[in-house]
Length: 219
Image (tube, rainbow, N blue to C red; front, side):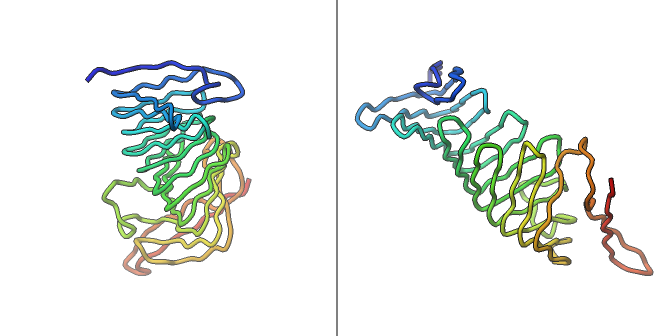
């Protein structure tokens, strides 16, 4: 099928204060004047100054200025943070979002976040029923496969401050809970040094058996 490309002003399709243009491309593009919905299907791509989005299907409501992307969604923001999800609801300026069942890869390989649900407010992403690990993660990996991970009721990721803040968190090693933390935070940018706990190190010996080491860096 023929691939259609449409370049529009952000004032109409995805309005932002900068009035910058947005590129929307898809295999099929329809507009329904009755509902004022723009529907794009098949290899959908949206590129804006605030991020890029790929999906199988996208519906944009020109009245509410909300868009819903579904099917193999990949979103990359301007700070290099990428996420995958079955569905994402975004405001026209890409600053507000509701995301279901997401996996978020932090910039510079600083770890992976997964969550049942997340809401984005400008540069802060609030995750519910979330997990974080700095270990390599595969699609088939289970909790017991990971050397360690953190599971929390709530995690807030602040992209500008490059930090994660946790509420009611449990540290797991190979799927076994070993430590509870009611609240703590850590940085996600290795170039910004600050005091805090370093990622746990796992080990074993014939004398002590399995062990975990938590180190603290004082700057």
